[in-house]
Every structure is written in structure tokens, then in C-alpha cells.
Length: 246
Image 1 (cartoon, helix red, strand yellow):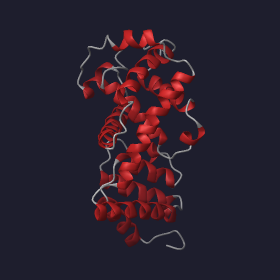
Image 2 (cartoon, rainbow, N blue to C red):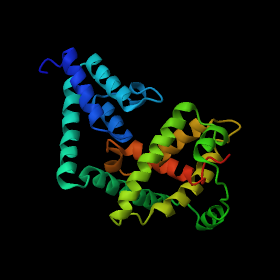
Image 3 (cartoon, helix red, strand yellow):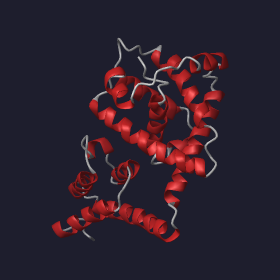
């Protein structure tokens, strides 16, 4: 693949390899970024893993990024081989530890900027009695667009897997507390400024992502998967019916 224009046979081989790797949502999004593409532009809503494999390979060929994609695939395959040899996903464990670090860092930064009043925390967290089914909440209550509904489910699923791994590793101490503080932050910094009768749920979601990203230190902001993990943090809180209950 020296000229970065793989033959049709080589393209199909790449697609078959990707399908066989059983990648998670954050893996696909990372591959898109490795070829300098926005994941939302590469993968249509509702894409299956075979669809995603075909889309990422076609996009890489179109933009002359096949070598970059192949290198990223090779790194992922190497991690997968470690899983088979050791019996534990080192990559997933590392990501789970990073997620726990993100929860801890967001807590630290929210305290640093004095974004949370403890009295508000106690009051709001004690008033949650909404147990709406998640898909129904996303569609009917929060009124997210179809694309954000899909993103929410994917992000929450990835977040749940990583949180279970983090719990096994003993790094889950801050998960519940951050969910409660996200609830207060959303109510005081997002909902008041961008009321539902004037701004869409998609707009408030993007604003919340931007504000949480902005308070993180540079070393966190530079991570390839940081936006995906912030998505997971937000939709974890939404799943608990702490935010987007309007």
C-alpha cells in the first residue's frame, strides 16, 4: 500500500478485518479521527459494524488516507492479540482507568471553579423521582434529534462497559458523586441560560459538552477519545434521569 491507493481486493480485505475485530463505538470514532475525519461525517445514523467498516475504508481511500487507516487498524489488532493471549483486555482496562480519571478530574475542576453549591447539590439530588425508560426519555421527553438519540445510546453503552471494568479495578469511587454534580451544573449553568422553550435539547447537549471540555486541563483535552468519554459522562447522568428531564 505504498502509493496509498489499495486495490479493490485490498479494500475488501481491510473491510473484512475490521468486521472481524468486533470494534466498539469509541474504536470506530477513533479510526475516523486517525484519518482526520469527523466520525459523524463518516458513519451514517444506524450504521452496523459492517456498514461502518465499508464507510471508513471508502472514506480513507477517497481522501488518500488508507495508509493511516491501516496503521491505526494494526495498532488495534495488536491490542486485540494481547487480549487473546492474556485473557484480559489491556486496552479496555486502560480506557476504563482513563474514564475514572476523567470523572475525578471533572469533580476537581468543578470544585475549583466553585460551580457547585453543596446546598443545591443536596436539594436537587433529593428530588429525582423520574424513572422514564431511556429510549422514551431521549425521544419524547428530552426531544433529542434522531442522530443524538443514537449517539446517546451508543455512548451510554460504552460508558456502562467501562464503568463495570473500572469497578472491578477499584477505580469507581467518584462515579455517583459526579452524576449528582453534573445535575447541578446542568441546572445552574445550562438550563437557566438556555431554556427549553428557546433552545433545543441538541443545543443544550452541545453546550454542556463544550463547557465540560473547557474546564479540563490541556493533557485531558488532547486525548483522542476525550469527547467520546464526555458524551458517556453526560448520557450516564441522563440515564439516571438527573438531566434533560424538561
